[in-house]
Image (cartoon, rainbow, N blue to C red; front, top):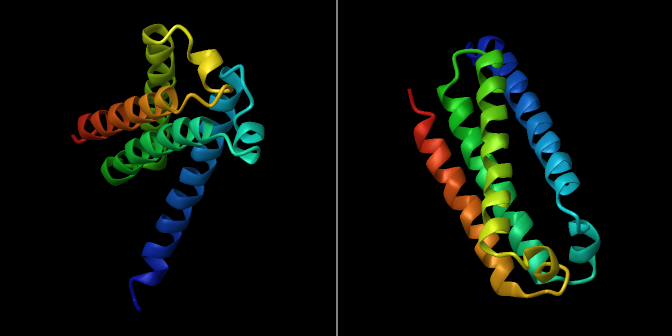
Length: 133
């Protein structure tokens, strides 16, 4: 138990910053999408759920790598913001590949949601792998 006075503050600070970064990502992501994911999910839209879940998981995977490889909270914050930008790029890339994406999500066209979620998760995994230094 002697490690608690040293380890617990570090855990709490990293975990708290991680939760804040996830919240920031969530707000920014739902702000840049023209449809209302939470409203769609509450209405049973599987497409919105799949796309948002993939985006969140992609970001969290990259953020987890940033946390485990960071040397300070500032380092974690910087790489967490890099991960955020990469996840936003995932959305923009899929929007370019699927020109009807902005209509497909609200219309519950599940293939588009799965594709967006998969690209988001995949780029998050690549992002995480690149954050090892």
